[in-house]
Every structure is written in C-alpha cells, then in structure tokens.
Length: 223
Image 1 (cartoon, rainbow, N blue to C red):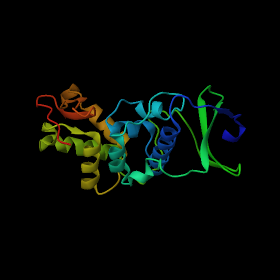
Image 2 (tube, rainbow, N blue to C red):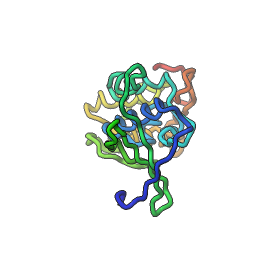
Image 3 (spheres, helix red, strand yellow):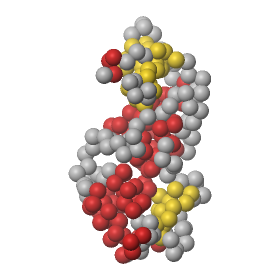
Image 4 (cartoon, one colour):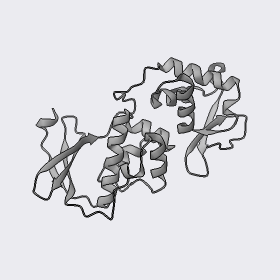
C-alpha cells in the first residue's frame, strides 16, 4: 500500500536538520523497542500526543536536551544513539517526503541521501492510533499488569508519587518480563475511585513530568 503512495519532497523549516536526525533516531529506537507514540509519551511523562507531534517534521515541537537522558533510561542506549555528532563531517543529508493515504492521513518518508546521489530509506511513519500495539517481546497480559498495580496499593507503593518509567521498571523487575506501557497506562487510569477502587491522581512534578500517587497522600516525587 505504501508503495502506491505518491511522495513529494518537502522542505523542513519547522526544525533544524540536527533535530530532524535526533527525532528519527528516537523513532527507530522506540520502534525497535516495540513502543508506540503514545507509549513513549507516557514513559516520558508527557501528554498523550507529545511524541506524535514531535515526529511531525512540519511541527515546531522538538525534543528538549534534558529528554536525552530520559531516552537513555527508556532504551538502555548510549547518548550517541540519540544525538547526532555535530562535529562530524557528514557526506549525506536527510530528505523528507510527504504523501496522503486514502484516509487523508499524512505519511512521511525519511531517506538519507549520500554524496553520490544514492538514497537509503530510514523509515516511513505518521500519526499512530493511541491504542496501537507494535510487535513486542512482552508476554505479560493486561490483567496481570492491573493485578500488579492492585497489589501495590496494599503495600503503600503509591503513597509517594512516581513517574511512569519508574513504575514500569519496577513492574518489569517483579514480573521478570518486558511489560507493554499501554497496559500499565490503562491500569493506572482504571484506578479512578469509582466502584470502590482506590484513586490515583496525577500531576506534573518539578521536572515537568507526570507522576502518579494516591489521592489521600502528599504527592512527593520519588524519581
């Protein structure tokens, strides 16, 4: 289907070339990890469509410098895997093309154009559904994740607020397996105080990241 799309080369003016390269590096890392745009936004502690907007070359949003260390934690990678080397003498540049599919959705194609004129496809991408599940190594069910969250209320885990990445890492450690961030996000959202369930509330911490804690306890941030 993508082969039938008619791509047109566009000029990117919303973000510098280095930010385009960084965005593409993060895009490839998240897809390799099996994380959707929403899941990465969740782990970053940002609004639902933050990554969707950051991955739109026509959007002015780009990843701030402090996100680089957060990405290193999320993807367990080196800074060089995220941030392009601005001191290197590159013989190639990134070319972005745009097409519209039959559903009127914008699709981007990123290619690296070498000095000899040859093209190397980096990726084809666009806005993703919030509930998208990419291929993942996780075998943990959504109910298992919800049960884990229930158990954490009993031992006071949420008395001190924690960000999503910290909660995910704790969950994966105890369940001894990768966990889909979407399942964790849904589990946290389910505890809204209705039908006798405990209530989790979220707010931004001093670092601008959403953290989650029990309603009746002070939301003191613990990494």
